[in-house]
Length: 102
Image 1: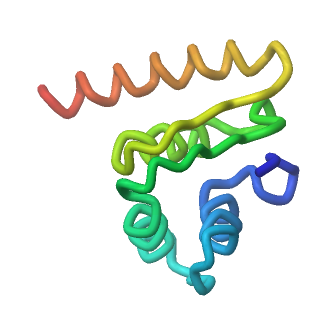
Image 2: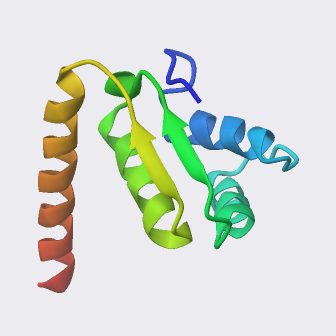
């Protein structure tokens, strides 16, 4: 998959991903998430995301959670600013986890 200005939101990305793995398109984010996790869980597939530097923080977090919950491999490809976005994602998630434990 490639990140484009049209799919850099998590819901649009999940719709496209569901289409690629043969799922009917669903509209609600929750339903999209459950369908993608169910279809990809334990498959050993690899998700290659090109132009990942265009992804926003929510989408990067979505991709990380998808990897965490399904065990798929993820390859992110993009420009140098992707490294900075990944650092922000890690910091954001550390802060979120610290707040949820408090």
